Image 1 (cartoon, rainbow, N blue to C red):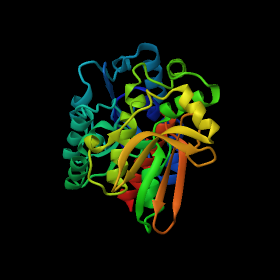
Image 2: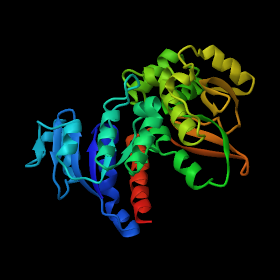
Image 3: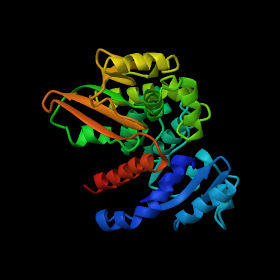
Image 4: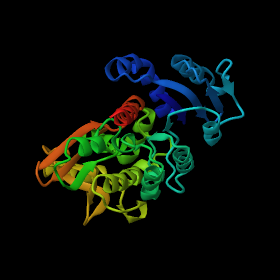
Length: 338
């Protein structure tokens, strides 16, 4: 499978790294030959139809931060959507930053690939939160595969899990923790008694929170994931503006301490059902499935036949998110073969 990768930040680099690590395993187990034929970032691109050297790509990015410095095959005149007309590929891996205002450039990249009859795997949330039904309709119209497991829970396999493991059950609701950064902050405030401000600064130093953490702490990231799960798992037609959102910026160490004394933790919880689409801080019992710590994500799926089923996994990290992307790539090829 010839892969074109657009977006070479943490997630994009993670994708190239695990392809380098796992391509022999994927070839031996699934008879799928993975080949990265084009990569683009904000500086330019590198294209080789015979396949780019993954380790060399990572080394050049690390040392120069400019993909076009790739020997012989680098090009500083091509980037983004222009790359798609200049490389012969089977699957676009779209890993650009989430834009919740317009969904760009992910929306245009995805639609371009669909119109060119190419499959797409994305870790992006913006275009899905704003234009979910349009994206799905265009994929079906062009008879291509569109996978987005990595957009919701990193390594936590909730979308694939619900569709492949629970096909006999109707999923009535999902309640979970869908943002690793806020879970880390609230966990540290609970264990250390620290203030929100100090804990946020600590999470930035550790690289868990972005320099601008607003999408996480204001509940925006979790709300985007709520839209994706509502549409893809529960069949609820909704967009970002339909979600009731409250972040964690007003949570105090005093409130957390009071909750602890009563046997509760405070967590940022997403509630997804036909009656409620909401992201907000909630009290959860100390020994419940919601009492997870660090950057873990979790979700409980309420079903009619299997009861409550809970999945837990790392919701952040370049390798963890890239693992979900590689799973989607493998599943696309398996689907085509079947």
